[in-house]
Amino acid sequence: MTRRPAAAVLLCGLLAAPLWAAAPPAAKPAKRYDVPYRLTDTKHVMVRVKVNGKGPFNMILDTGAPAVFLSKAASKKAGLEADDKGWAKADSFELEGGLKVPDTKVRVEDPFQLQGMNRMGLMGVELHGMIGYTLLAKYRVEYDFTADKLGFEPLDFTPPGAEQLDKGKVDDAEFNSMVMLTKMMSAFFGKPNYETVPRGFVGLEFEEKGGAVVVRKVFPGSPADKAGIKPGDQIESVKNVTVDDARDLARALAKAGVGQKLKVKVKRGDASEELTVELGRGL
Image (cartoon, rainbow, N blue to C red; front, top):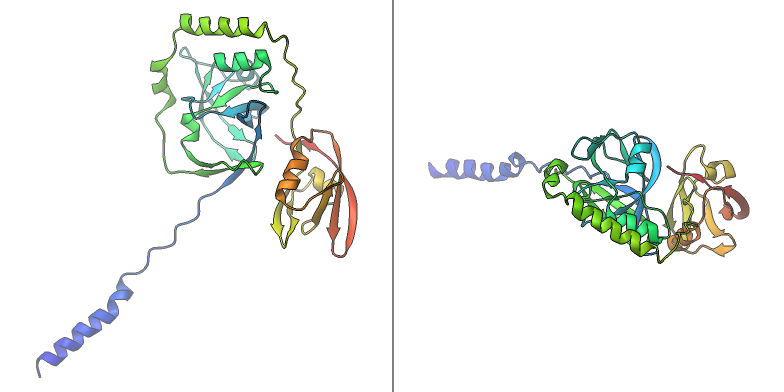
């Protein structure tokens, strides 16, 4: 008789155990930024950046670069003043798409790689710098070359300070010799011709829905808003090119420059309408 109450208590304890071990709260999803990019003629990934509110500057993502490099001319435009070791701190560093990286350490320098590329016009666009490890390591970067944007997701990781990288600086004599070599090579290519214009800003977000490309959001005051495009509109064509999916739309907008007027056909309800969108400047 004395064992039954003990067994009952034990059974009650087993039944109550799941209540004590409450499930941990679900992790809050990290913020994701969609950063527009383009491939240069040499297939380097290029993004547009504003530094201290100035720009935009064309910069390539270079996982082999140890830090963020910005040309001397672009740094001067952005109001950066380098210290005696060549480093400067940008109060604001913003990638197109809304990704802001405060207090970014920048190496004020004209890397010989960029000097050579720009002098020979190999990229098809003038480059102003490179984004390297000290910034890229802070994010999980998703590359999808079938889309027109890169995914940047913040990580809980702080890479080593850029100051530590100064120990591996190339000495001036070696650096200057490489610069002279690129100048000699560029003489054979003549003056570069940068015909590429900045991609125009439309000001809308879209999604594939029900086998169509549908406008999800229109930014107030944007070219899309001024043209009369509204959330829920189905985009049927751009420049008389049929839009069947997001890739079609991305391709149609990829080479559209600032100030260009595009004929955009949208379907709203049962009626179709052709609107004119005059592209603006993003950053």
